[in-house]
Image 1 (cartoon, rainbow, N blue to C red):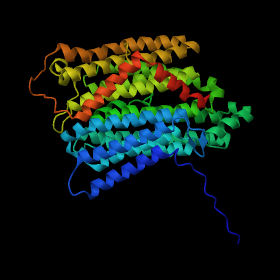
Image 2 (cartoon, rainbow, N blue to C red):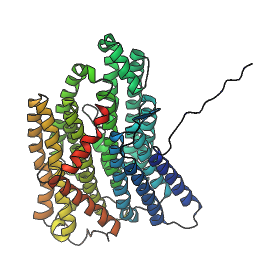
Image 3 (cartoon, one colour):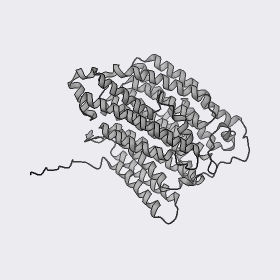
Image 4 (cartoon, rainbow, N blue to C red):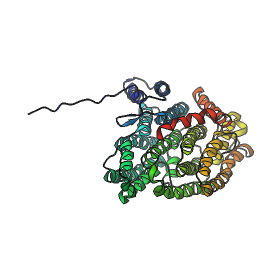
Length: 490
């Protein structure tokens, strides 16, 4: 019998260096925790931080690789920009975790940092995936890690409930997404994103296929769960409230960035020829998502729940970019994701610092008087709230401006008007936090001291604040970077 020769694929591992570094760091951190005779939480955080720094350097060094596609991986400016965002999210999360872990003893473990890095690894593969199977596997790696991190407060019933709810609903969403991929495969005969695009060019009759449209709808639904798109948003407030605050910030930014990147890859690369089929779906989803998020946020007394509904609303603003569908809109999505990462992580970082021993402090009464008693934290929180509300001269304002401008140029004026109205509605609940911080006295003076803040947390909040202001005042560098990063998609 003739033997079948196996030919190993040619792989340039330099392009996969960021993912390799994160994987190696996660394994090293876990083993260091297992074999160390004493508990060194700062050491684990330091190892995780240094590994992420190395991955960030690897991303920047190969920001514009020559090859656009390598087997199942896209290595282009788009994936590099998103991987850079993910690395920055990881860095800020690790820095904030240093102080948070002093208050919650179950955070003092290698599993926490290992899962954080593994979820970042899944996000990196997800934004670079050139094949739908790889995208699904990467999404599951990210999701399973986040499920466990959500329930990391093992003695807290709300945390366990949030993890279980997120897991069950996430499993249904994954099944819907996989069914969508199956329909796309049935209509095109391939799961490779580039091959799907080429097939639709060669077989224009397939564009009108009902199976293909069904696959697109199911795919949007599956990924819509991850970005909290209406009507798949109901899990968001409960999960955000129950998860550890640092995990909530990581989840609200990293998962959203990875899921929106996947939507861009799928909808704006192979299916740009059938915009007429899925644009009305996203038009309605964008309007309902930003409206529901903003209206429900108005009545929240818990700031984490308010930020959860705010996250839903911001997902609606980002969906306006998908409706526009132009190159400018794609660049606007990238810019907005970077700005959103800094302002949301910063807001959750401030809330994480207010925690007491083994107890979160996230209600409006918990921040009363904080602006005057702790001017530094108050100023940082004010910048984050201004940016989330879209007030100039912050990054949040510029992000909305770019997306709204792209939508107007594409002819979706009424959707932009509705987006502007929603932005004005959001000002109320963001400024409500500032009013409580600066114009109300603490309900129990002296009983809610802010813990001693580690220098790493000061660094994280300072970098986030300065990044928001710099991106708002001098946006040209980041805007040009975002524009250059989407050339591979056009």
